[in-house]
Amino acid sequence: MKRVYYLTTVTCLAMLSVFILLFRFLNLSGEKDHMKVGFVYDNDESTAYTYNFSLAKDALERKYGENVEILTCSNVLDDEMEEPLRELAEAGCDVIFLSSYSDTVIKLAPEYPNTQFCQASYMDMNGVTVPANYHSFKGESYQGRYVSGIVAGMKLQQMISEETITEDQAIVGFVAAFPTSEVISGYTAFILGVRSVVPSATMQVCYTGTWSSYALEKSAALQLIDNGCKIISQHADTIGTAIACEESVADKEVYFVGWGQSMSEVAPRTSLVTARICWEPYVLAATEAVRLNKNIESMVSGRVHGQDASAGFDQGWIEMIDLNQQVMAPGTQEAMDSVIEQFSKGRSNFVYSGNYIGVNPDNSSDTIDLKEGFVENENSSYPTFNYVLTDVIKIVDIK
Image 1 (cartoon, helix red, strand yellow):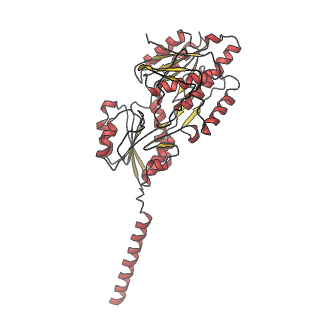
Image 2 (image 1 turned 90 degrees about the vertical axis):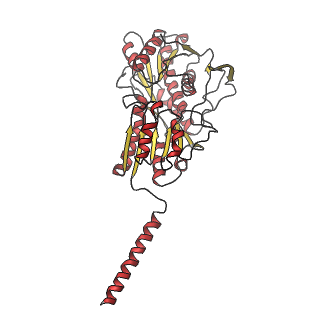
Image 3 (image 1 turned 120 degrees about the horizontal axis):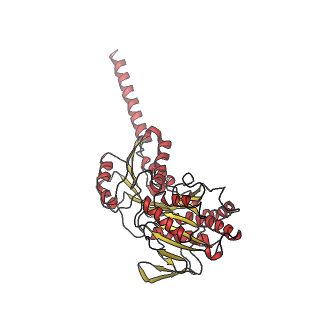
């Protein structure tokens, strides 16, 4: 009888050893059954930029369900970044995604090697050395801006054809936060898209000096409308510009082109279309890489520049949403589709090209001739075109 017990015990131990070895074999990659993911926003979801970024969080919840725990910190100013970052890392976050612009992340990352830090790029990362657990990413926004410009140009051309405006009245406006290369690159692509349809079009740009101020953005938009701008777009975070257009349309024919978040609900009579960076592809791929214990950039479908990644329409990182069928000019959808197809095939050298001279606003001796062309996001996900086109773009001081 003792021999039977002995054999049974040995057999059980042997089977247990097999199960342990099998488990270890199947889990050699260190795959995680449960993840903790952090998000840090510079505003809250009431603003267009943060709301758009938060859609990636929603996509994570849908994909992983109970297998992911998400911690969120909102309204975190750049100079207040350190404390919430430490809290998330020390709470055990496997990966943290940040929509804000702060170099605190790069400085802090080495202290938490078990956490991956993924930040929406805020500077040219080409040649910059960063910690092994720091990553940057951004959709190639100039593509969406250019297509938005085509939509605006089609509407201007309709207004010219219907003789509600003349060619020299084909003026668009742009409410911008700051004169950074990201903003300048975007509004330049927008006006070049407009001019691909209406070559006489010009643009006025008004800087607010802040990323998020409903009052300033609305005031700037109203000023541009009073200056004769027929279509207004923006690179700022609130609905102020859209509201200004919607409230003005009863007296003046004006339209709005959005960025980040659809404005069709707040500006149903004036909103033409919205372009957005779609953050979901990167966030989902990066999270899956962390789950599988793989290098993040190896899982990203896009252009990888070291630990920096970007993509456009080709990988679904840029989207056009809510084309207003009631307001758009005839043929707009076809014109959009044609250019998006070019982008999707990897062709983009037609954007920053033509008989234009650009001047660096920070150094007037630094100029660029676009006859030679310029390729955006060639080496970095952060936009680097930093020239204001002479005779095409006028900077207007906010009153």
